[in-house]
Length: 456
Image (cartoon, rainbow, N blue to C red; front, side):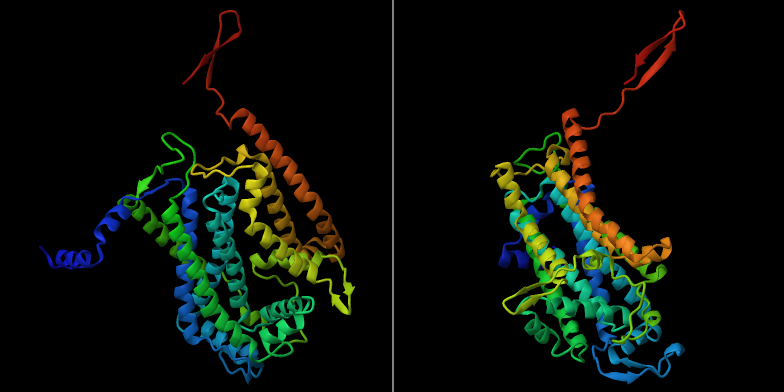
């Protein structure tokens, strides 16, 4: 017996782990590619943790002002915050600093995108149904935490673009009726901008939210392990089994290759595609704004909602509910609650309280597919509206015209998407899916006509 075998036997004598490990190594995972979306997110999160740890060694979350004396000569003598100066030092003086900064930023964009796509797959296939409602709730919370984590990280360099975004966020927080002023002072300790704000963002960004995300990922995986994967319908697949590859060796090899691919994509984007060049925006100055300006893509829908939201303020019992409250607070809150309780809404509408292991084909539930398409078009329209100034500039039309168009499109677009998606799904359901056209060979007959020969 080798030393390794003796050590493993010693562990098993004390923990009784051999049975669990043997069972785990034979656990079946569905082979469909869409089940790898969740793993992509997990590996991107690992990239974020690794690159974020590197950045935390050099970033100084200090909002006090100093005179810039770095190698970027265009800012010589400019007054900047120490946070901005440290981000510049990371970009131009630390070996590999700019590469890691860009990998981290790209990974953050991919992380939110991956969660959104993963949730889309779960929504359209009904994977949230009993008994997986809890995991859906965990996923919704992960999505919103990822949005918040991305925004806090994007805001910390204290450049002109992120500072403008923070100013908008503080205004939105202040718009909350009754509590807004108190919440704002609690969050930033004074009137914006404050020297303590970046330090607080730093704590939230590298300690609190990542810990919550890691905890929720662990809960998510534990529930998946306990409940097993759902699966698409197919030969041999029932409501009581899982057909797929065992964890070892086939699935482990696939998953390992996916990890390497994720790291390669993040590194490739960070190395080849510039993102967030803070030296071009310059340090934050409350009296200045950059235009045209765009936030990261996942904040675009909120930006668009703010830009096209109705100028409607409400005055009640001595309190004012400003116009920014409706698109920036009420709308996200409604969406959050609806997403959170969606499994129970779906079950009530379908009068379905049964447990499901087999997934729905999107065409089998046309109204749900149509609803998902409508929500997607609505979010897309808001995101596009968030760049109305850019579109107006390149199309040589007024911003007002673009804004009016998106106000109309946000109503008409989702309705049209619902109708079209419903019609397609219902038609596909009636035909039992898309079938390949029969293969034929035509033969010219002696009389001049054609005869069909059906091919396999």
